[in-house]
Image (cartoon, rainbow, N blue to C red; front, side, top):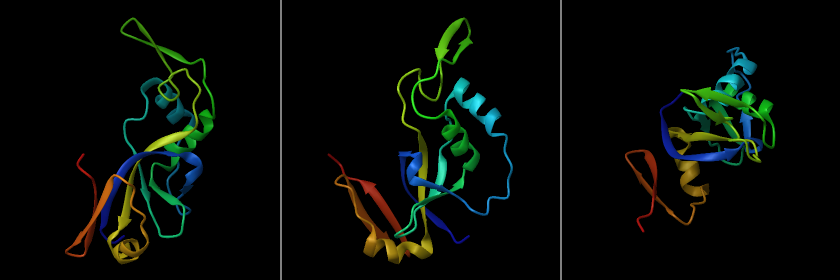
Length: 140
């Protein structure tokens, strides 16, 4: 894959993500869900933004599937850690809409397309240089 540029980190609803169709790895989704319930999500998914397409999960497809398996709403899972009872690391025992923390990237060969098509958020500024694109949060 050509070099890529990190665009942003955000929490994204799972229904806005598409699994990578050629994922060659196999993962134990139920075991991953068990870990997520106990520990929460430590590492973000890596998703590629492609102009006029859904975000594609490049890394973390099985984590996404585990979060989907958890489903909407609260669960009654609790874990005890050092004598302290903790709620589910996914939903925190509260009503939850399936989302995942994700690192959004664009391939550097998509920079020109994005410079023309990417819609900046109100708090972002677009900077391009040396064939790379950078999107920064605006200072208050």
